Image (cartoon, rainbow over all chains, first blue to last red; front, side, top):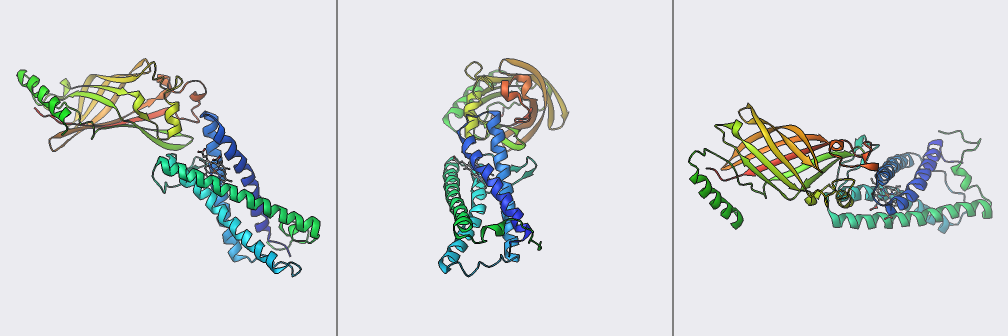
Length: 179
Length: 189
Ligand code: HEM
């Protein structure tokens, strides 16, 4: 049994976007202020807000569509570890963009999605709050990166070492018939 | 009222009392209550900044509005563009070049009453060594024994060479910058 088509598309779309937003965040941060830096900051924020909305959609989808159960060949502690890791990943997919959004407001630059849709400033401009939220954003990102690596390695281990079908459930196969 | 204003007030009162022809006038600027701010757009984001140090001399007689005059001087180093990285950048040569041009000025040239409490104030605005003629509508409100002069003036930054070189890209920082002033004056004669 596979994940639904919608779940698969959302999963890989979000993965792709964080693989762009993450290095972009590290790179842009080092640049001296220039028009390019301002553009990259905006693109980073737009991509991040897109991750946020797609993650909300994923959560909505996840609560209405039970993922296929793991095969009983997988030990109970591994099943539990996988479940906890997935919840944490969802939490970070929300917390990372939210921390970025709040940080931007604290630094004095509102977030306007694609230059069109303004997100309200939930905190006032405040230098020390901005610095704090920047550290929070970085810390959450490092946690996210660590979990993504573990998540990826676990998938690869199941595929190449255990030889089971866990990882292929998140890919399209000709067996996919559901939504 | 701080001692500084009190001294100012007294000096001005004495000076003006000696000029018998002087009618009702509003002069001393209440710096703490007055604001000089500006709005602009950066990457589609509405931004707000302000100046913390500026002086203004305003002479206004409600009975003879056309004789009014105004003069501003803005300490450009006191600028806050709305975010801290921008505050280092704005002082540089491509932007305001404050080491060469530390102040901006406005001098009124002609004042026309529009209605009871609005004036069209025509004058010369000098920023970064460039002088351009501008006209701003000015609203006058009386509040207690203070008189408030407020209004806004849109300018195009490139006309004053504000943001040169790479920064002349108007898709990043838009050309139009609106200056908003809210000047509270006391000292009624
Ligand atoms: C999945 C979403 C996101 C990821 C993976 C991500 C990742 C990162 C990373 C790795 C950095 C570098 C941190 C540092 O070096 O200090 C960064 C910086 C930054 N992020 Fe994000 N981010 C995301 C979403 C957002 C959102 C939604 C916003 C704002 C709306 C945002 C705003 C920022 C800002 C302003 C910085 C620069 C901090 C600075 O230079 O002071 N991020 N991001």
